[in-house]
Image 1 (cartoon, rainbow, N blue to C red):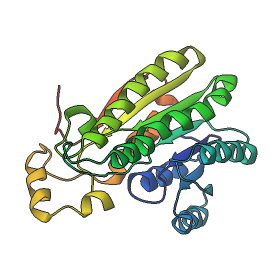
Image 2 (image 1 turned 30 degrees about the vertical axis):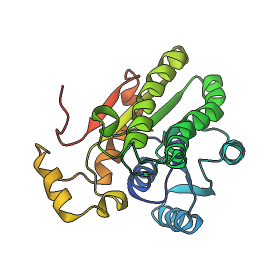
Image 3 (image 1 turned 180 degrees about the horizontal axis):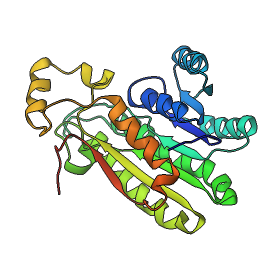
Length: 247
């Protein structure tokens, strides 16, 4: 599943699932534009990739800022000539029961998790249409499929990503562009590391495979969907959850 010659842009690339996706795409030969707010972490990641013979560049950006998205995408295309693969991974949580949730926390999560994916896609889609090849991969969540108490904003944003994925897939399929979503379950990241140990143990009981997933489990799937081997898959939600959700 070589990605040699391809250019990928990954949002939320500084840690967790995003970082794992960057490393895997670079390992497969892609040139990777790494995008996140933390410039220091991005530079460390680019340095690591360079040390292993890969090619990447850091582009500090806040996905909640439309102008930054527009400017960054233009800069990436100017530097690398194109964007073949877009991984919309950036995401945040602002958990609270819906009856107590502040409008600002609703807006922040929707804007970061969902609106940014629409804006990033909009900025790269013209180039993909012209070259008649593209891969758009949206990182959604099991909670966008089953909901979660205290996460009305997060679950809504991730469910919205699934609808966005299918709509885009229909719009661009005739130009050899695919759009798919990956729905992780319980993955060991900084976001889940903050959970109390008893909640983690309860979560593992719900996973048929009996273990928490690793960011690399998601990255492997993203690399596959970005490849030519996945050319006949579009509008699909691929679950990476150890069996938590079946059917």
